Length: 309
Image 1 (tube, rainbow, N blue to C red):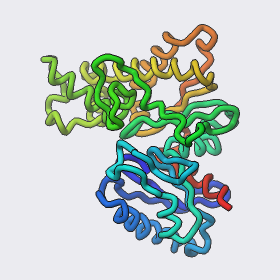
Image 2 (cartoon, rainbow, N blue to C red):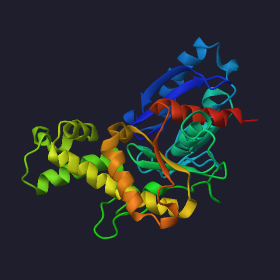
Image 3 (cartoon, one colour):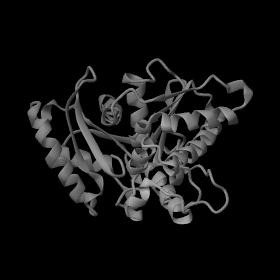
Image 4 (cartoon, helix red, strand yellow):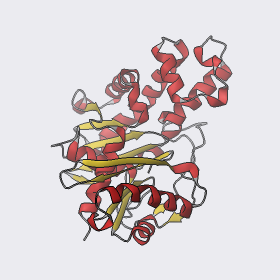
């Protein structure tokens, strides 16, 4: 479950995704109606593979998902506020065992099992989507912390003074600048405060998306290129801090913004290296996810299901 879309799949013991689908996360303001649509849509695929009796369990990755409790708790980018007992709701609706974790943690497990992090015991997964999520693996284990919420790197403070207000209630959070929505916000701010010509001026200000910025940058638009440089600078500086606490072999970038390729990777790498302590310079790989966007999270979530007893 992402802030915008929910992707699902049916996965066999070999890690093959047999069926895929998706629904809109934001469509329903009532979480019960969301669960109803998820059940209706998913059951179509479940029946195609022989029915619910063939399903071992359901794993779910969700923003602010707590592995220990099975709850989604105070997720700023979801339409439902407070504490939502998603694992319990899924179990009751589908009649099978269910487990839940943070969406970025699920993606990290998928990457560790099937993707770019295979064989790695120390890495950080960064998801750049509606928000900025993270999954931290140290010595082959996901880091959950004492309460299940460790690894909210998107809510570390990257701008200390006069930072943007975040959906979490803080100001200056990394995700307000380096998520897809943050990139669009940077574009709007630049266009409002400057007079430079730009392809982006042909789009209504409030309708600009990160995809629009990417397309403009690919055409050589100076403002769009500057937006990616600025975003990459902040992300690279943050990555240097992340390296300092867990010394990862790699930082793996996942999510919609990763599609920008070298437009984002080059400034991230340059600014990370510039801010690393000498002991880590040139040692930390920056990689894009080796799995397609839906499969990484789905495969990671499915790994939760295989552990259910």
